Every structure is written in C-alpha cells, then in structure tokens.
Length: 235
Image 1 (tube, rainbow, N blue to C red):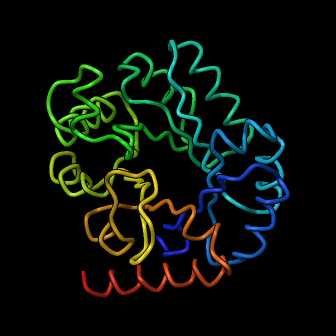
Image 2 (cartoon, rainbow, N blue to C red):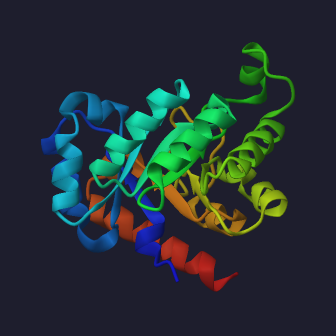
C-alpha cells in the first residue's frame, strides 16, 4: 500500500541546486519524491537529478516532452539513464509519440501523459481552437494515452474522479495545482485541497509553493500528510 509520504511530490521550482537541496534537507523524511521541472533543470542541468538520486530521493522529471516520436524516445532513454522515477510527456503529441515514450521507458520509469494544464480553463481551450470543455479534453487525451501504453496521467483533481470512472483504477493519476486550505491559488485555474484530491481519485499530489515558500517547509509538509491521513480514514 502506498504511504502518504510517497503520495506527496514536492515541486522544486527554484533557481538553484543550493535552494533545492536546502528544501530537501528541511523536508526530511516527510516526502520521498521531488519534482524537477523546467526552471531548475534549465538552471542546473541533469546534475541536480543525479545528486537527488544519489541522496536516495525519487525524482519526478517534469519536462513535458512533446516532439516527433524519435526525439521523444531518445529523450526518455536519457531520462531512464538518469534513473528518474517518473517523467512527463504531452498526451497531445499523439499515439505514435506516446507509444515511443512508453517503449523507451519500459518498466524502469513511469511515463505520465499530461492531459490539460491546470492553468487552463474552458475559455483558454476555445482560444487555441480545441472544441469542448476541459473535462471532455482530459478524458479524450487520457483514453488515448492509456490505449498507447502509458501507465499514468497528469490531470487536475477536478477531473480525477471522471478519469477513474471512465478508465479504471490501474493507473496513476498525478494532480498538480493542489493547494492546502487557506493558501493562495497563484496561477492555477483548477485547484483542490490535498484531501479533496485524494478522495477524488488522485494517486499522487504535487505541491510546490505552499511547502517551498513556507517559513518551515517540514512543518508544511507534515500538515499536508496529516490532511491526507484524514482523507484516507474517511474513505
């Protein structure tokens, strides 16, 4: 059974390895997985991933690969060499790209297909020419990813319940845009609390600023774990 400390992914959206390592040390054993995204990876390159893995941490490499199948396949192979636990690709890259990513990862790294960014609303989708609302697009891309051999999805917790209902239980649903009660939404358009996300069907939650910008990141992480404990007891 997955422990809550493994459900919580902390986003290291900072500018340097020093800042990232300070957060990791402060959090301690309250979380085992840390997200390295475009900001930190651009600043520090793959060495930050190597350092985290060497320290016994799991790395969620969130670079959202979206390119021709051969390019994505090569990038995924390099990520596997870095021993990342999870990585992201865009589901909108299509079935050929998704299959190439899944094959390149094998069973060594969990590939997560990003459905619709949590910063986007129905109006935003219409603006870029996508018909239908956010939920319909998430379900469409989720089904495409599953059919292409992808074993996990990235989606807002608002869509997690419908994804579970439509696609079943045997895949990961990682939900960014999670905000503990009383914190700011920031640039996220579709957010839920950690407990609500878990009850909706999320397998993992990604939390950034509410932990990394807290006066005491370890305390903030423990409070979220306590909230997850309460949600599981009410299931």
